[in-house]
Length: 73
Image (spheres, one colour):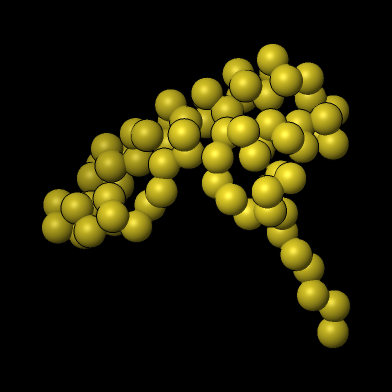
């Protein structure tokens, strides 16, 4: 069996914008473009509660998820 290790950046799976940027060139991205993409993703992901509510997820579940779903800073 082959085990795949998913690394986000130079600091492994640590979820931060700086860690994502550390491997941007592996995806053919310049730092400026990578920062813009990260910002766009952050903006969209920050709206998850409204998407969840629109799809019928209850307020109590959304509140519990606030403590589980991390932010990328």
